[in-house]
Length: 266
Ligand code: MLT
Image 1 (cartoon, protein in one colour):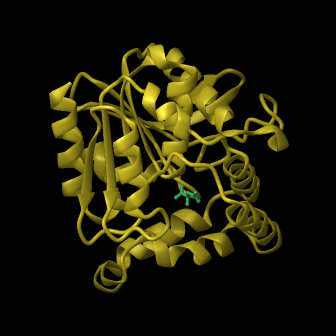
Image 2 (image 1 turned 180 degrees about the vertical axis):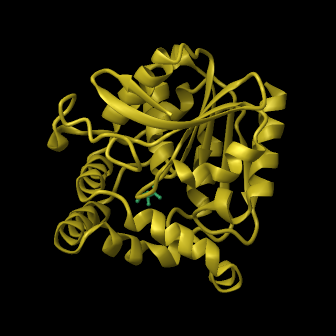
């Protein structure tokens, strides 16, 4: 589905298998198809958009020039999308970069958020070394295309066992990363590089929060999820065994069970 929100077009998938509105925010450098198994398996009113410049969503240059895109820009886009769809009291879920954006949605629009799901993500900002890595990846994307960034990240997305035993999953994730636009990828890298540290806001989160991660995530290790669980009062942490960074792709049944149990508890 496509919808015009504050001046440009956002593409999203939708499924209605429950009443609670649930926004699913994909990670980097991915798109809404990341959530295919959640669209099928979650008991909610699911909205899974492509972030600006990813998948089939417009780059939105007319709304915000590419060099001015921040994590808050994506949060504003998603808030405008929810507003246009007339959805309130939304559970906001994000994986990895999607989690950085989910925290920004909560910081800017707490009245919209009924609950948070933070998957394979962290609250902290980039280290100096991490920021340099963003610049290197932006140069790589400009020089060799988005696929080159994807190739570099691929070994951390799924466990080696899954990559060997289910090669079609690796192929689908590689293809998803390879088809993203260079402009979208570079804008997101700069937005992640410059994102604020969300650690101080954790103590202020007052909505039910579910944290999910993979026991073998080396891109964002489980200790980051444990730190968020300690920081967010009443939050629950689910660590899925034998899973790396894309926990929802690698073990969709375990991921969906955790989310459906959480939705039921609201
Ligand atoms: C993601 O999976 O969204 C990104 O790898 C997160 C990051 O690079 O910080």
